[in-house]
Amino acid sequence: SRDEFRERFPVTFDVMTSQGMESLCALPLISGERARGALFFMAAAKDAYGHLRREFLEQVANQIAIAVENMKSYEEIAALNATIAATARRRHTLLDINNAIVIKLTRDELLTAVCDALGRAIRFDRVALSLYEPEAEVLRIVAHAGPYRRDDYTPVGRALELKDSPAGWAFVNQKPLVRPDLETERQTSSEQRAFGHGFRSLCTLPLMIRGKSLGVITVGSLMRFQYTEADAEFLMEVANQIAIAIDNMRSHEETEALKARFEAETVYL
Image (tube, rainbow, N blue to C red):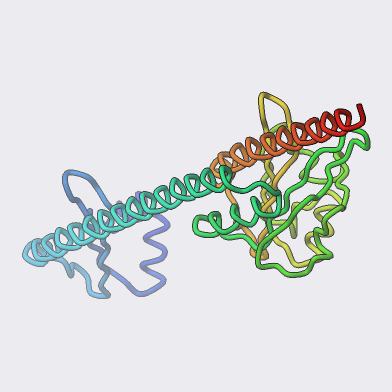
C-alpha cells in the first residue's frame, strides 16, 4: 500500500512524489547467482506495472545483468593483461640494467644506461645519483640524467643535508620515500627547490649493500601522483642493482689506486 511504502522507504517516497511519480518497479540485476545492482522504473500513472509488464521488465533486467557481467569480465581481463605487460617490461628493464652494470665503468655511463632502460618501464623527468661523504656527513650529487635539461636543479657537486632532504631520509632510514604530491607534501628545503623547478612528485631510494647505505637515487616527475608504493618496490630493485655497480666501481678504483701506488714505489726503489 502507499502508506506502507512511505513508512518503509521514506526517502524514495519523497523523491517519487516530488517528481509526480505514482508507481515504482525495482528489479535486481542478477548474474551467476550474484547481485550486480538494481534497475528502477517509475511512472506517473498509478498501478503502472502489472504482472505482464513486470515479467517483461524482469527479462530486460536479466539482459542488462549479463551485459554488466560481461563488461566487468572484460575490464578485469584488460586490467590483468595490462599488469602482465607492465610486469614484463619491468623484468626486462631489470635485465637491461643488470647488463649495463657489467659493461659500464663510470657513474655517468651507468646512470645514462639505467635511464635508457628505466624510461621503458616508468615515467620520470630527472634521475639523480648521490653518494655519501662521511667526512662532511652529506650526500653529494655525482651524476644526473633525464629529459629535464636545467642543470641548475641538481648540479653535480651539490650537497644534500641528511636532515633536510628526502634523499637524506631515505639514506638514514634505509627505506624508499615517495612524495606523490609535492604541492601539499613538501617538507624540506630540497623539496621546496624541486617544487620551484616544476617537479610535482618524486621517489628516492637508498643504495644498499651488505646492510650499509652507499647513497641514494632519486627520480622526479613534473606530474603529480606519478609514483606509488608499488613503483617504489620496483625502483628499489633498480637501486639494489645500482648499489652493486657502485660498490664494484669503488673496489675497482681502490684496486687501481693501490696498483698505481705499488708501481710508483717499485720504480722509486
